Amino acid sequence: MALIAEPFSSSVRPVLRGVRGAISAAHPLAVAAGQQMLVAGGSAADATIAAQAVLCVIMPDACGLGGDMFALVDPPEGDIVAINGAGAAPQRLVTAATDGANSVTVPGIVDGWVSLHARWGRLTLAQVLAPAQDLAEQGVPVSATLAGAVQAQRARLLRGGAAAWDLLDLAAGQRFAQPRLAALLGAIGREGASAFYQGAAAAAIETALAAGGGVLDRGDLARHRTPVLPAISVRFGAVEVAVQPPATQGVLLAMALQALERCDDPADALIDHLCVELTEAAFMHRARVAEGAVLLALDLPIDPARAGHRGGPRAYLHTAGVAAVDGDGLVVSSLVSVFDDFGSCVFVPELGITLNNRAGGFTDGANAAAPGKRPVHTLAPAIVRGPHGSLALATPGADGQVQTLLQVIDRVFRRGEDLASAIAAPRWRSEAGKLLIDRDHPWLGELASRGHQTVPLAGGDMRFGAVVAAGRIDGQPVAGADWRRETWAGVT
Image: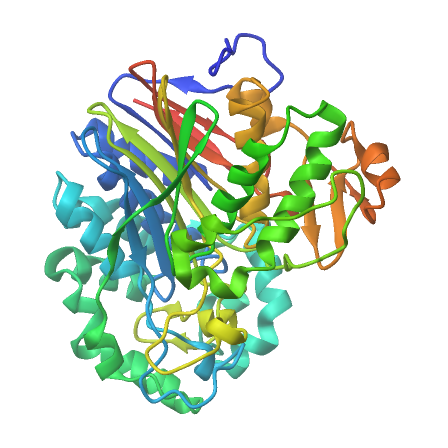
């Protein structure tokens, strides 16, 4: 099996080989910031934070300092560790909403950065955040995607207090400067987490939420701490796949992979049917993901021949990924998000950010809302360790994340495809009882014949995710990126 194929003259976006390190991220400017850290002698953790911060500047519809981050870290020696950079519901919570001021949980990204940096950073936090701060000060062109999101969410943004936000008056291609966000990034670089969770920033967040009837306050912000936990791991053939522990639903990916490993070696025409069914069976346990590795003991009964029509996965789309590796072999897989477009759309003018609506992730049963509780999160990065080394994989797509990574991991580590081809291949996504599928997928007809309610879509549809990949393979830093969206990769 050639995990990394030769890229010369390839029509598939190649996997790149580096010397000092490698990075893949949701936007070329984020990749550039990560490369800058690696050239300066920074670690993969430094590169990851720098890239995430840039994404927060240029993609405020998908992520931001009012949102969350999750990261898996594979050190050169030792076990894979998970950074759970997400906060809890307010202590005074009465009812969790899906939008507006009472849909906000404590933003976890800033303290997540500080926790990741404290363990594995080499440069100062100010150095790491400098590229994002500079872009916020100088301004960046508004992308067509961002301009479209503003128009789609204008009414929500106005309700959330964003009438004076410059972004609302800008068209695609116009320059968007964010001096208040730049100042906040500078303060975090100098002072650490206290610049966000205490003082003037915390007071501004409380005031913005109170204006909409929200109950999250400065006490909730001051109490926030970032859990650093062991990853959950399963064997899949010759490799170990590590996923994020609760509060994310990463364990659902582990459940599906483990069940697929137990299947007799199926024909190619049957694999995707099995993966769809195992996905839907795993998602039946979404509300229980707080139980973590305990769920790995559950069976996932499926019909190997016919679609079961369980449904389960939902239609959320947002998030941005970063995967990085440095010359010492430290590997990081990560995702950042505010949940829906612009999260809750509650705007904090003093900081230039909107706040997440992650309380919309509460459902029922074990995942029912309660004061001080973290909802189930969709963010599900993964790291695959095996004889060739360690590879970080992540993708946006909410409930599609588990499904996209299942397909890529299966193609590379069971079917024996090279990584670039596996990332580029046509995909499917189970969503609300339908099977969305690339219209050029080779097994579209086969899946329809087995009873799946197929919905063919044009190649590149954003619902199929956008994989970032980076790692140390056969002793060399490598990075690859999906051709979908604006995903990019770079090496140093």
